Image (cartoon, rainbow, N blue to C red; front, side, top):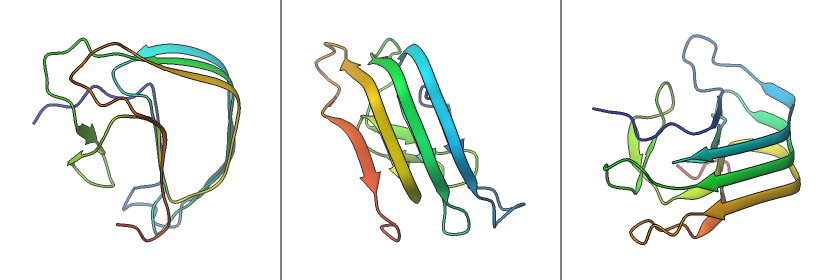
Length: 126
């Protein structure tokens, strides 16, 4: 199976080798990007993401591949390729998230459902 337009930023604690991993106090400052997917922040039951900060980010999401939308590639670790709506930032198992001066723009591609800048899934929602 092919990937699904890897995101511009992908942070995860989904790793069976280190099940108690915690990633914390991670800043993303002054970023500009064009991507088919935005940002994926995936903690897990065994490892939280904590206190991530985005400041001065300009993200434009646009489609240029011929693959259909509606799928997100969670590999490696958490899951495989899963059905998921398009979002600027996808977050799971995260504690402490800050945004300041963040702009997320959608392309005018009519077949993609660019409607959710922040997709937050609370603990235990899987």
